[in-house]
Every structure is written in structure tokens, then in C-alpha cells.
Amino acid sequence: MNNNVILLVDDEAGQREVLAGYLKKKRHTVLEAASAAEALARVKQEVVGLVLTDLKMPDKTGFELLKEIRALNPETTVVIMTAFGTIEGAVAAMREGAYDYLTKPIDLEELDLLIQRVDERRRLLSENQSLKQQLAEKFKFTGIISQSAAMEEVLNMAGRVAESKATVLIRGESGTGKELIAKAIHFSSPRKDKPFIAVNCAALNENLLESELFGHERGAFTGADKQRRGRFELADSGTIFLDEIGDVPMSTQVKLLRVLQEEQFERVGGTQMMQVDVRVIAATNRNLEEKIKDGSFREDLFYRLNVVSIEIPPLRRRREDIAPALEYFLQKYARENKRKTLAISKEAMDMLLRYDYPGNMRELQNFVERAVVLARGEVITTAELPLPLRNLSSEQAASPAAPATLSARVDALEKEMIFDALRETHGNQSKAAERLGISERNLRYRLRKWGMK
Image (cartoon, rainbow, N blue to C red; front, side, top):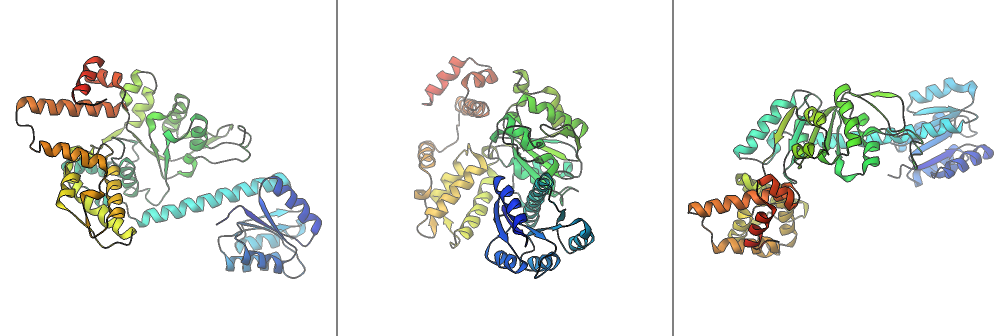
């Protein structure tokens, strides 16, 4: 729906011309109608987000027009414009579903504020619709794909904390399902019918992140032509999920600490203190203790976030979950692509079960979707699997047995620890070596020995 279209209805041409010109300068798309009949024809032909209509017109009143517009499209917002002496009629129209009224002559600043409120209301309705869809999906702990003891422990911890308001820090590699656990906590909590608002803190620069979280006042910075409510306000009474919390800049960390301590904040460029009741769930794939040591993360914020810590193990450490996840994604993408239920050949299944999945559940999901799309028949074969997986499986097939000797087992454990450290430090060999307690030269020697760059 094009919610930016404004329909201006007034039989006075001069009044229409002034308001239409002003709204167009504000970069709104404006349609005009000189009568109620013309307005109805416009609404039937165009998708209109907001109608500004005069109360008294020759053919119909704004009150009657309101009823007919609501019958055509209940989502269209209607605002009545009226002279001072007919405010009672405008109030009556509001009882019938008008959003608000404006008195003539129209105060342009008041008009701007009203349009901002309409935009915010529309945004909240959209958030609410999304929330209803999420609730329909019934995020329950039983809906998470898991049969491993490691994940059962995670789910038990999440279940115990769901009833409280305690702040939760979810830790784990990318793709392990941190947001899914956060949603499970929210939708199993007393706040389940309130908003769940997710923010990816790594996706925005410092200025945008602060505005996104706390909102801003009009004129707070270049381009801030409207007041905007932040995610904390939108999440009031519900839950806010701060993903990639380890990437939040220090200046924003100070404001986050204040929200956690006092449940208060100010919009960017504002002076009014906003009070909110929000449950905070944060997530990271970073080592926050290391970031505290290097001065890039506040220790006091860490302790505020880390009231309850949930560690999600990587998929390679809970291989029992691979098979049920494969089955779930196979059925899901078969339905989405209107395919019959597909089978997986023994060779392809063997490759999928033996792979380490550095991208975790997200990588497994992508593999299955790709295979379903590319499968020619009713059986997924190794040909539909990505080349890196086939190559790695070929190397594994050369020595399929698990390391039998003590030396071989030590080598295998050493390799796993080094690769884990490299993943956690995003490939930074200096930091990985420091974490492992070995020299960087020693680390590079081992990587060369294994044929890795």
C-alpha cells in the first residue's frame, strides 16, 4: 500500500491550492478533490493513505464521506478539517472513525505534526500486524529443531528465564539461532502479546544506530525533518532484541547502560526524559571479555547485560541435531517450491552429516534450499550439493575412520581449537594466537602444515 499519498478534499479552490502546494513542498504525493463524489472516485481508483477532508461540502458532509471511505478501505486514515464553530460535529465524526480534526485556517506546523502522528500510527499498525503473524507461528520451545543434550540444556535455561524480566545475553557463533532463542523466550513470557523488536547493531553506523534505538527530534541533525520514535519506545511493555551487541560504539553504550539501569533515555536532539518498560535480550558472536580488556566495551554494561548468559553450541558440537534439521528444511523448501517431498541419497546424506558447518544452522538451511531448487528428480544427490562440501567430503573419505592413536586425536583436537579461535576472532591470527597461548609464528606454521593460508 502506498501510504504516502494524501487526498485533499475541499470545495474551496484557494484553500486546496495553498495546502496542496505546501504538502508537495514537503515531498508528499497529493491528490485533490472538489467534492465528496470526486473524492470517492479517487479512493476507488487510487491507493490513498491519508484523506484530509472539509466537514461542510455542497454534495455531502465530511461525516458522510468518512463513513463511505471506511466502508471502501478501513485502513485509510481520515482527518476532518472544520471551522471553529463546528468542532462538535468533528468530534462526532471522530467517534465514527476519523483519526483527528484540524480547525480552519489550518496551522501548517500543526498539520506537519498530525501527519507525523499518522505516519507513526501506520508504522505501529504494521508492527502490530507483524507481531500477530509471529504469534500465529507460535514460537514455542518445542518448535526449535533439537534433540541433542547440549541444546536441551540451552532450552531449559531459556525456559526458566522466560517468566522473569531478567536481561539475557545469548552467545554463540553466527548462524546458531540466537534470534530464534530470543523469540522463544519472548513468546513464552508474560510479554508474549506485546511487541518483539529486533535491532542488528552491526548494520548501522554510530549516528544511525543511536537514532534507531532512541529516536530523534525534528532538526536533531541534517535530514531529521520529522520527529521519530526509536525502537525502545516501540518495544515499550515488550522485548527488544539487540543483536551483535559487541559492535555497539562506546558513546551508544553509555545510553544503553542508562536504559538498563533507570529505564529512561532521551531522543537524539531532545531534552524530555522518556520512560519505558522493556525487557532486553542481547546477543553476540564476539568475546566481550576480550573487548573489555582492549577498552572497546564497557565492563559495567557487560555486567548489566550478562544477568543470565545462554551459550548456544555450534552445530559441529551437536551433530545429533543435523538429521532432524535436514528433514525439517527439506519439507519446508519442498512446500515453498511446490515440489513433492524429496529424498536424499545415501552419499549426499553422508556428506551432509559429516560436514562441520562453520556457518552453523543457517549454512545447513542454505544447503538444503539450494539442493531442493536444483534437484532434477525426486532424489537429492551429491551433484546438488555445493562444490566446497563435495571437495571436503572427498578429503574425509580418504581417511573415514576417526583418529585411533593418541597422537592423531591430539592433532584433531588441536586443529579444532585453532579453527574455533580463528572463527571467534574473525580470522585475526594475532588475536587467535594470543587466545590459544601460542606465538603467531607457531600458529602460522600449523596452518601451513595443514595446507591453509
